[in-house]
Image 1 (cartoon, rainbow, N blue to C red):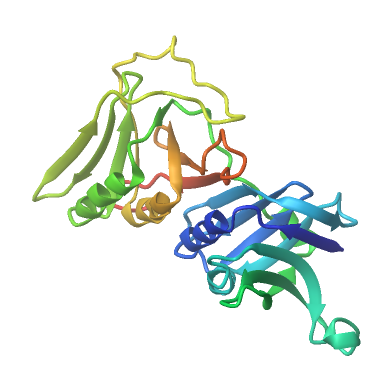
Image 2: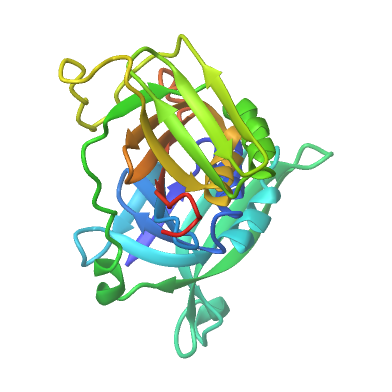
Length: 294
């Protein structure tokens, strides 16, 4: 199997990996000819998958031209820190530590993601450094286990306020209760609420819009009372993990499946500008009971 690609927007890619690190120490990279999916499992919070576009030179695999790799998000994030200000960043799948030429094959070779980072020195010369990040090639049985959670059709979707603001509010609500209730209706109203024996605090936003995520079914507005709120209670820690992506988010859509889950689509970069378009982060946050149990 072979994979080699240029990272078109290094800053966006680095920020994306940094936002995933708090969610999970390990991610699965699903490599395809035109897109890369990152899939994380996070302490019962379901699957978080991200997609970003890259310029691919070569991908070859016996499994429908798809490659699945397990990688440490922390190790990949550390390697990418060296790419700040780089003129070119290339990523490829290689084997290192073997007995072949320059240790690139033969006995005891192990798979790595090799990042070639090219920058200009103070003298104006081109300098390339290489970082190798160890990976594990997933077996077919492990690939088959990577299934997205089954969810009913959303009862409402809504374009969220800035995630940085939601993060500040949610951190305060977490001091009241370990469970936060998310609510929205078809009037463009969105609420976050926390309840305890000592306090009941709710924050509301109005005048929001109702777009539909790409490739997602549009909920029926005709069958719903536009004033009726649809709600789901989620673990406050799980919600804050999603909100950690505020630094790279440009647009975020929330889909509420009442009493079942909340699904968040975080769009990265400018979708109208291919040079900054980073793709979509998708977060699945399951419902919990008011006492914090699943």
